[in-house]
Amino acid sequence: MINLDALNHAPRLLLEAQLKPIAGTRFQPTGFPDLGPAQYRLPDGTQMLLVESPQSMANRLEAVCWDPVANDWVEPLRGLPCVVVTDKKDQFLTCSVLEAHRLNSPYILEGKDKSFLNTLKGELAVGDLAPVNLKLLAQVLLKYDVNGLLHGVFLAKSDIAGGRMRLPRALTAFIEARNVTTAPSGGVKNDALNPSGDTARGFGNVPFHREEFCGDITAYFALDLALIRGFGLGHDVERLLITLALFKILRFLHEGLRLRTACDLEMDGVLTVRRPAGFTLPTLEEVQKELPDLINKVADRFAKPPKTNVVFEETAKAKKSETESSGS
Image (cartoon, rainbow, N blue to C red; front, side):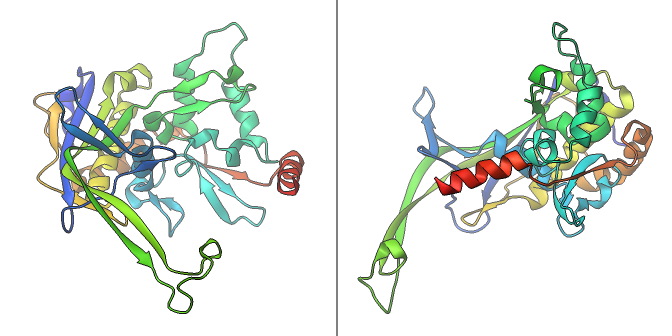
């Protein structure tokens, strides 16, 4: 059994991993509309760069838990609850693990099938003047989408507890680089048949420039242990959530570091525990071995069956809005 005793009274688990390009020295960071690469300077003048944002890292930590071929959890996580969305022919479309807003996905709550929406309304009902009960929300997430307990959720619909059900991330991660320098480059899209053709239609030679970067890359992971204990879900669930978070981190570092075509990274050293002192990280193999037993211990608190199915078909209102938009 993995020894988690050092985490019993710690408020946070903080981990760091040094990364490097798998080939060469350059890498491509995440970009933002109207901003481009997120560059900034520390007060001492050190040039910094955000390589991967917390919101993107949440998606990546979820993706390593899902088998896209089987459309199911990866093997060590089979039996965990989630909401699966299919079409009318029972073909898989998406699920709460893959959706950016988890249970608040429009494919789960905004289609014609209102069965799960009505379930949430009933199980999360609170009075208009009553405070939000986050322990109740935690219980419902444990039942239907345990992933949301780690990555947070905001059920923004006014008819679900007045749109006030919101849980922050317990697991936060990001990647940044320091001592950054710019590596400008470029190229040309060649048209051997008509070099001076209409580029607006895809013809002609089109020169372009691009910017990559060099620097010291670090991935940071923070697990809010105090928040997990505050859910009030009991020792077995706490142990499951911590072990699941470790699985996500270790598997991401093992096989999830190809962030983009021009940002293929690997570990440069070992994953380091910054807090708390005295905690020894288990291996990915140890975590994978323990997870099935932890899942079985709390399976009676999951939905039965653990996969809740929602059939997605657009409402007439949504179709009308789309038609008006395309015709305007």
